[in-house]
Image 1: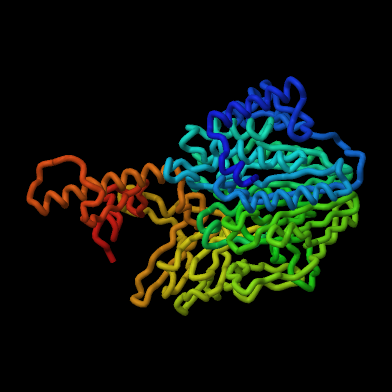
Image 2: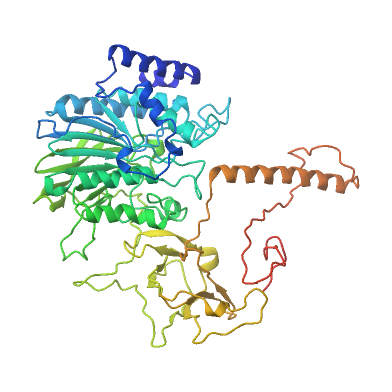
Length: 624
C-alpha cells in the first residue's frame, strides 16, 4: 500500500496546497505528524526568503540557528538514525517502505525514546524524469519531490533534520533561481535556515550544513557547496561549544570534507571536481579539515554522496591510529563515516544500508542497518572518550568483501612522519634539481612528487592527478590516459638567473616577473619523437583541470550544437541536390552524418598578440 500511495503522489499544486495547510495547522493548533519543537512560521519563512542574497559581511552570530532542543536533554543516552542519498522515485517505492519498517522497529525498541533523532543527508529525489512519457522535467529538487520526501521522513515517527545535497536544488524547470529553489526546500522540510543545530544528549549537539548552489556554480553544478555564511556560522558554533567545556559535536553534510580519508571514486567525483565540500575553492576546501584539527569538540562527521557501502574499513576513518599501522592522520578528534543508500537501484556496489549512532557521555557506536538483511544492526566501530580532547576508536570487523566487488581502495600518496618514511612511490629530484620518469607511463604506473611550490602531483590508473598538499587527498585530473599513457615525464627549472628584456611584442620585461617564493618549473610530457607537451598550471597555480562546468551552461551549449547540427544537415541535404536556396529547417532524420564541434574562450596562448583563435586539431589543422 505504501508503494502505491507514493506512486500516486500528488502533483505540484496539490503539494503546495497541502504544505501550506500543514503550516497553517501547525501554527494554529500546534499539530504535527511528529513533535516539532519549533514550528516554522510566516516570519521564519520571510527571514530566510533571501538567504542567498544576504551579504557575508557582519557577525556570523546574526544567522538564525534552528532553535531546536535545549542545552541538555537530561538523559545520558541518545540514538540517531542517518539516511544516505534517498533519490526517491515514486515508481520504485518498495525499498523505501522496507527501510521504513526497519527504522520503525528500531525506534520502537529503543530505550532512549526522549533522545532520538533522524538526519537525512540529502539528494532526496531521482535526477531524471519519473514520468518520461509526459515530461522531461527532472524530479530532483521539485516541489513534488520535496513534499514526497518530507512526507516519507515524517512517517518515521521521530523528529527529523535534513541537509541539502547537490541534487536538491535541481528543480531547474520549476524554479529560475537557486534562491527560489532553496526557499521551497526550507519550507517543505520546516527548516528556518539551511543549517541546523540540535541538542540531543548531555552536552551533545547535531550540526548540519546544506549545499546552496546549483545554477550559479562556477564549475560543475554537482559540487557540494557550503556558502560562506554557513561556514562562518559553523566556525562560531565550534568556538562557542569548546571541548574543554565537555561539548561533543556530530556533523552532517552531503559530501565529506577534504582530509576525511574516506574511500572515493576517482573515475567520477575526483576527476569531475565534486568529491569534497567546496571542492573547487582551494581555501574553503581545506577550511573544514583545518576546523577539525583546531576544535576537538568535533567528534564525528557523517556524509553520503558516493553511493558506496559500509562494509569497508575505510568507510570509517579514525582521528588517530596505532603508529605501527602508519603515520598520524592529523584528523583532530573526529571520526569520519560514509553512509550508503537505501534503494538497490541507486547503489554502486550493491549495498543497501543506513547508519545508526548509539551514544552516551562515555562514547558512541557507529552501526550499520542492513536493509538487504531484514534491517539487521551490525556494530562497525566503537569510539571511547579518554578525555575531552582524545578518544580511542576500534573497528569491529575487517573489510567484508563480495566476490563481484570492483571498487577497490583508491591509492593516495603517503608523506610519512617522524616515525615513518614516505611511501615507495615518491620520486625525488636528482642532483641537478630535475625530476625524470624515463620509462613510458602505463595504466599501472604509480608515482608522486612535490612541485617546488609544495603542490603534489601523482600518477594513478593512467591519469595524472593533483593531490592536496596538506591532506594528500585527490583534487582532480591534470592529464587523462588518452594524453598520458606511452609518454615520459620530466620536471625541470624554467626560471632565469638574470633579468633579460625580450623583444617579442607584448612580452617586454616578462622574464623579470615570477614567484619569488618558489622556483619556477616546467612540467612536460615527452613522446618517442622527442616532442614535448608543456603542462601549464592554472592561473591560481593549481594544475587540476576544472573540465566539467555548470549544468545550465552546458545545457545551453548542447542546444546550440543541436541547432547547428540540424542546420548543417539541411545544408548537406541541399548540397547533394545542388539546391543552395534555404528551404526551412532540416529533418532530424535526414540521414546525413555531419560534424559539429564547439569553440570556447578564453583562448590561451604564450603569444603576446592575439592573432588566431583556432584550436589545433579541432577547429584548425593540427600543428606539430
